[in-house]
Amino acid sequence: MNSRERFTQFLSGTAYSDGVPAAFFQHFDPSARHGQAALNAQLSFYRCTGMDMVKLMFDDIYPKITTVREAADWRNIPEFRRDDPVFTQQIELARQMVRTVGGEAPVFQTIFTPFVSAGCAVSPILEWDKVVTPHFAQDPEAMREGLEKICRRLSEFAREIAETGIDGFYVSVQGGEYGRYSQEFFNAWFKPVDLAFLNALKATGKLVFIHICGVDMRLDDYKDYPADIINLAMEGNGLTLKGAQELFGRPIMGGLDNNGVICTGTEREIRAEVDRVLRGAPGDIMLGADCTIPAQVPRQNLRWAVEAAHEFSR
Image (cartoon, rainbow, N blue to C red; front, side):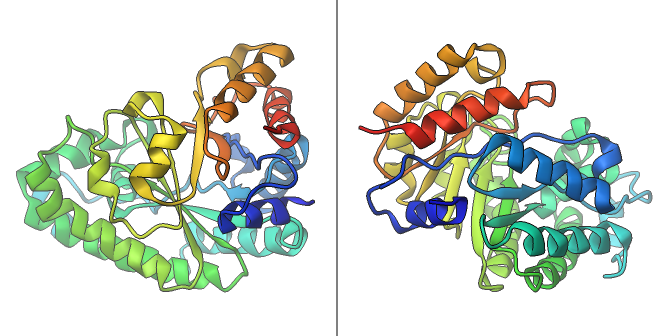
């Protein structure tokens, strides 16, 4: 059974006949974001780990916006052209990846919600929420106007990249943390933009894989998000794989702490942790991690986890 067959079985909800599907993700060196270097790096990662899907990293995220100084400035952010290299280079990478491995593994394009994209457009990635979080609270009308512009551009990008033959989108969503905004603010200002964006992705006819990025999230706020598959942190949100599946009623990916045993354990320890997680899980989940695995973690560690999942039987 190849990766595509194993992934298709996961989506169907039928009992597994050949182990449990698995996938983990890492960020790549900035020198491998575009062109042949990006294709080589991401192909090498897929081949070395033996995982069951390809997730195309998209660390450019969105073109840089240099005109925002205060919250009101979001009304006047530029509307970027479809031929901006941030988008065209990623579309070409997707086309090449589908051509190379699309027959054996599903290919998903990473994409970020307008809110996260806005943050990364005005701040360094590791400080992405430093500007957008207070700006949204200060002037939600102006911020929403800016997010709607970003939503339109990302939706157009999604329609174009869908034509390359990718299987779907892996969408990173944030904003529903208990400590960021009140539930009333989230529902009134934040959520409508998220839903408009996700519905645009669904309209492409491709699968939508939501990664709820973070801990201490108000998970009930995401129950009606249109998604085919959900990935989220388990322990950091007080959940198990079984509990996550019951909450969302959809296929779930996850189970391992992305900073835990998979990072520092021996082969024996990693395999034991995979076995422990899967024995307490429903029969139709996909093994993964809470979030991306730190880049310094050896790929062999990820391969041990994938192999343990593929060899697992109840």
